[in-house]
Structures are given as C-alpha cells and as structure tokens.
Image (cartoon, rainbow, N blue to C red; front, side, top):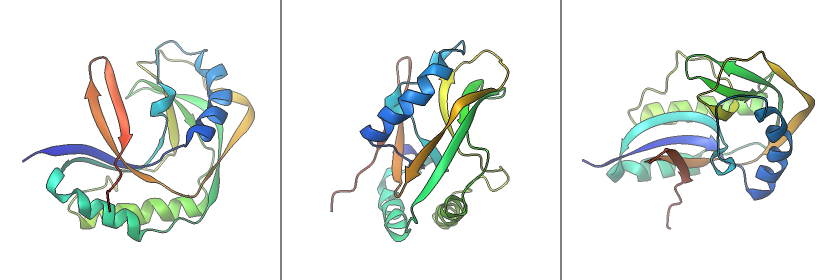
Length: 172
C-alpha cells in the first residue's frame, strides 16, 4: 500500500511569505545551521504522518468540513529547541480561534484512525533554521503579526539534501 507523509498547516501565500521574510531573515542570520527555504515556511496544525494514498479523500473531506474563523497570530521570539535542533519563531500566546481549529483537526484526524499526538502541548511556530547550534532566545525588535483564514493539507516530500512541502489540492 502506497502512503504519503501528511499534515494540516497554516500555509502562507506569497504576500505573507514576503512579509514573513522581512522579520524572519534578520533573526535567522544570527543562528548557525541550515536556513529553511521560505517556500517551506508553515505552521503545523495537526501532524498526520504516513497515510494511505487511497484514503486521502477522507482528509480532504475533513478539511472541507472545518470552518476557520479568521485570526491573528503574533510571533515575537526565536527559540532554540534542542531535541529537533531547530530555531523556531514562536508565539507567546495562542489565539482561541487557533486553539479551536487545532482541536477540531485533531478530532478529525483521530476519526480517520490517526493518533494526533494528544500528549503534546501545541506550540505554533515556524521552523526557520534546521541543524541549529544552541543559542539564547532572541526577541524580535518588533512583533510580527500574521493573519490567517484558511489552512491546507500538506505533503512532506523527501528529497536529496532535505524535504519539500507541497499543499495537496483535490481536483473536484
């Protein structure tokens, strides 16, 4: 059986990526490691993992059934996370609409037969450097406010030298 490695994520459009570049690039330069290509920037909502290709329509249906109340997410610091060895741009608080979205997606992922890592505390973040060397938390000179009103089902595609993320669009 063929599978794809999947997750639900806030997926920035090009305008958002340009704005994010303006606040991510200055702090990412302060960290030793491999910078994440801005085309891969995202905020994971619910990790699914390896999922059978012949059942992906279930996830598209779940996505379609979830409505998103528009919300803003403030990102204000760059932290070192030792276990994955990443530099992560993080939010000090989680908006209630984002919490509701994450919980609803976890429930739908669970209904599709996947344990959505209930034991982990959800921490919205953007990974900006991988294989990072340890550093002290860096505060952004100015908080970055991102606005969201949708999300995507995203595939993680392993490639030589890294991974590429690509939203899966269902052809209706």
